[in-house]
Amino acid sequence: MDEVYVNEQASLFLMEEAIATKDATLIRYVYDRVSLDKWPELQALVLVYLNPDATHIDTCVKLVNSNNLLLKDKLNVVNQCLQFGLHKEIKISIQPIKEWIESINPETLKTYQAEFENLGCNYLEYVLLLRNKESENMEIPVIFIDNLKSERWKDLYEFWRSL
Image (cartoon, rainbow, N blue to C red; front, side, top):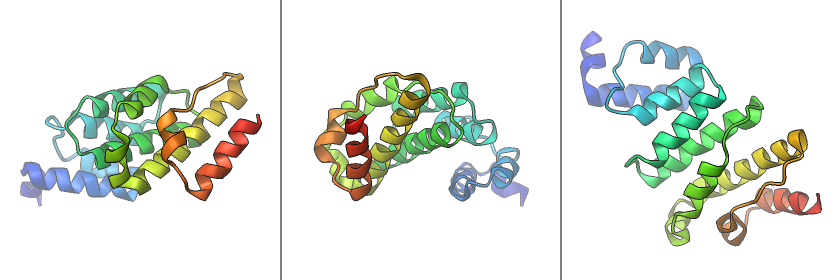
């Protein structure tokens, strides 16, 4: 089995599958056996799972935004980082996410509507959490406001506007 962990493509596949389970024990097991040197953004995401803190989440978002991952993968990774911030109530830097999402062509985002909707809703939930905890007035990217139509989004945005 060790030869599988040495093979780059197999290592990448195993790590992605482990992350998909969201099981920290499995992620740790695979992470301890593979090399992710060529995939720093994946390594950063693994660290978010293994030790979720603001530094690891901010690093992950930064690496993903500056990397050549597919847009769908970027949306998923940033979404996972936001979910950690939301569920663990970790203060992360939201500005890089806002700037990145605003730099993407809205027509391109329509190709990945489900991921985009999920990201928009998680972003808004996270900003609501920050606003509640710190009384900060945060901005919602216009790209979300103009393009998201799900019931979840509408309910969250209506609540946001009522505050």
